Length: 127
Image (cartoon, rainbow, N blue to C red):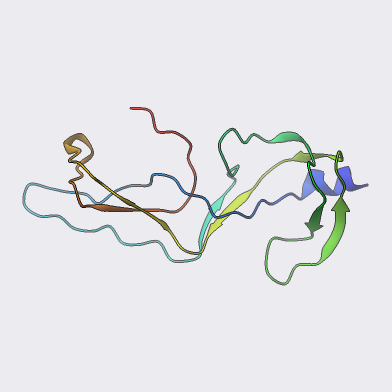
């Protein structure tokens, strides 16, 4: 029964960080991008490095809820070793991470001292 429940409902709540778009720079002026409203919802993402959807095995006891919102109801509890199928996820950021640039990155239009705000995890960035 738990596997059936988890097959249609598995939401991962996490605060995670990643590179997001920086502050654009032009030859004439530099304007900050508008900030996303908080909390920031990143739908249909798998939180964390190496995360993939499919069969997951519980490594510890964990509660399963009917929805991800605050007014949720507990509907099951997974035990160590229980198998579920993760089908979708959401990363909710309540406070963005901050990255301060420590050197000029002209190809990215960033200068030393610029600050990037991070809202969700996207793994390693390969240029």
